[in-house]
Image (cartoon, rainbow, N blue to C red):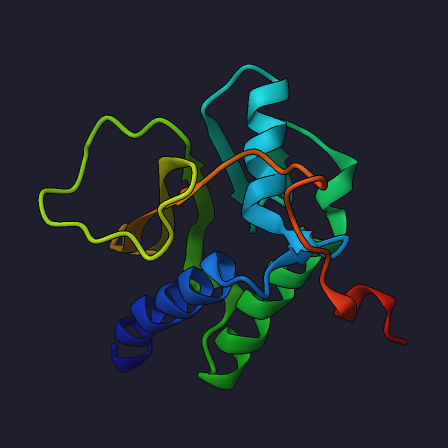
Length: 154
């Protein structure tokens, strides 16, 4: 039972890592790139299903990021001796037009529009372990952003 309680900690770790500026794709903030994908595909929701190994809407541009977060989940489950079979779902969802606006919210970054990031892990007993929060972003634009130097290091 203790291990199941640790699943919320894993969800929190996924959330913190995903929203971080260190979550980059090709040297640019991954969330900005996902925001651009949503805009291009005329949708407001982007979902990474870590167990089913799918991203919706589909895009090959995010394969490396997706594998990284799937590995993050597997690594943290293994560190706590939690079998992946104990989970029925593990999803990261970005909503770029959330209907549920936070009452008390102080943005860390104010440029761009409000979005909601949710990490939801469901265990074999249908218990939901969820972490969510809000921030701001705008669609990726290389003319307005600086590229990370990490992308050029070997």
